[in-house]
Figure 1 (cartoon, rainbow, N blue to C red):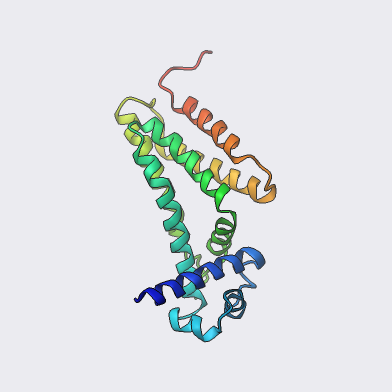
Figure 2 (figure 1 turned 90 degrees about the vertical axis):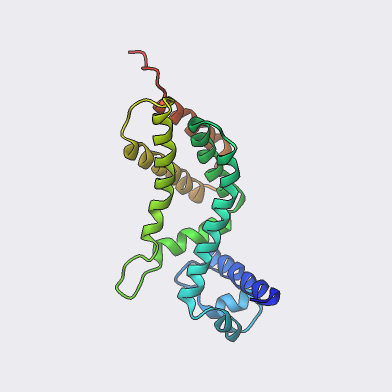
Length: 198
């Protein structure tokens, strides 16, 4: 694609994000997205085959941006414990700094279905869990973490982060930095090799 085509696609994706975040998945028609972008529907149709194609590209773009924001922070940590803490902090930092993008992402993932009624992005839910599993298992192999069921803990971290997202969505004034530090402490204690005092 030319620079102009790439820029136009990016503009349409941003307009879709703004539209879905503002009025929800169900109301985000191509006409409304075109209005947000101040272009005609035919321009969207030139770059994307249909609404489904556009919204799938929105999900790909936001997840790619989210991963890109996290990756350097994870790679900078030499220990599994550091990577786990960085994972938690960076997930919530992206929420704090990209509210409308995350609202749009959540709307699409929770509502976008194929012709058979299946959620299109159900498999995407497994990707963060796989990342956590790798961190937790590396920590166990290195002796940093105690013995535990890594899948149970990965799912628990994931659910804790989703709980933070729900709280933040319902109460935007939620201090996600403080929330992140509480979760870091909680899961440091949960993975600690030292037996807790009884």
